[in-house]
Amino acid sequence: MSGQDPRLAERIGSVQQLSSVVGAMRGIAAARAQQSRHQLAGIRAYAEIVADAISQALGLLPPGDSVPAADTGLPQACVMFCTEQGFAGAFNDRICDAAAPLLDAGAVPFVIGGRGARLLRARGGEPQWSAPMIAQAGSARALADRIGKALIDALAAGRIGGAMIVHAALDGTRVNLKQESLLPLDATRFPRSSIQPLTYLPAPLLLRELAAEYLFAQLAAAVLESHAAENSARMQAMAAAQDNIGHRLEGLRLDQQIQRQDAITDELIELAASVL
Image (tube, helix red, strand yellow):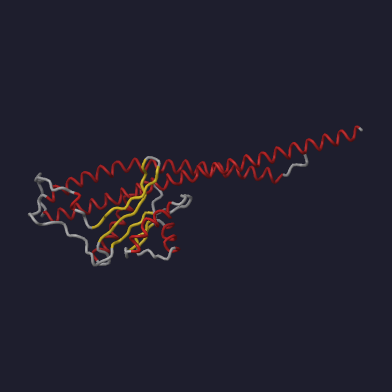
């Protein structure tokens, strides 16, 4: 058996270890996607409650009063939800491609995820504001608060007149892209309610407070949807990697089997020669 190459056995061992790592990464991605989907249901329910309250608050406004529209003389912010970690295939490219028309029209990029910020710079852009994307679903609310504060500060300072978000979301197992208006509040989405709520706040102040809560709900939902979609994309990338590793391992084992057979054949030839 001395004819076997020990380096081949080492390569097989390395590929097997790599397969274990990829399998673990795929399992972690699946767990994280599930956690985000679970928390997303609660955030959506909260958003519906706030939306109903906004409808009632709009009903308190005098006839003719409405929510201020976006300042068309200022650029919009484009909040792009990308990834912080790699191994997600073309996820970040798709987000940047979807945001490109907005950026070309003068929108200001607010980028979530270090990978997305680096990709945007590679394409000739520069984020005005950026933050790391979450690794765990439990961090979604803190990130939503941080993004919301940055947008409201930019709006108050006159750097932006409104905001859009571009993010990925899961439709079953398929990753789709969404583009939604974020700021200012689009009152047409909330039909005025005839219900008169009991409140001690002036209607405009109540509406501002509710709008801030709805902004948080929208951002938290976008974070969780993007996080779930990112990990779904990572699962698909790891599945493809496992298939490639399996094919590679099969080829290496075939080479090892051929070497073993060649070694046995050589020994048989040597034994036969010695008998003759």
